[in-house]
Image (cartoon, rainbow, N blue to C red; front, side, top):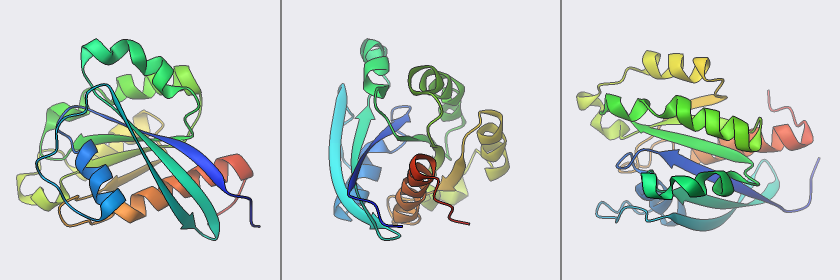
Length: 178
């Protein structure tokens, strides 16, 4: 069943250095840019795409994980349709705030689709977080999907955005993709 064009607000959350800006750069342009500046406050990007015949516009919001911007988080979440929570597979410490992110999301926007995204898959040899550990956290936090990506190689980037878009469409329109 085709629907009219939809616009969805997608949040990118995660600690500094996990790859939020490089993810958006790769997704938006197809290019891997290594020397991106950290987010100051909030950055917003827009991309049109089609998933399973559904035309959508994703408005991607990235927020800095700095305490001085913390007061903005509840406002930042308003109207969100889906969220990626990113962590770095080579840095165990980047998992620490996942429960905090999910708690804030549930409080501010309710039950929206959330994907946990392990970043820097191209650094597999330096992995310090096992897939099993990440899946365990995803399950304990009620996160809908888990994926690992590399912005350097592009592995699973498009797939991640398509999956989250499907989850949003499924929730809004009861579309079954199984």
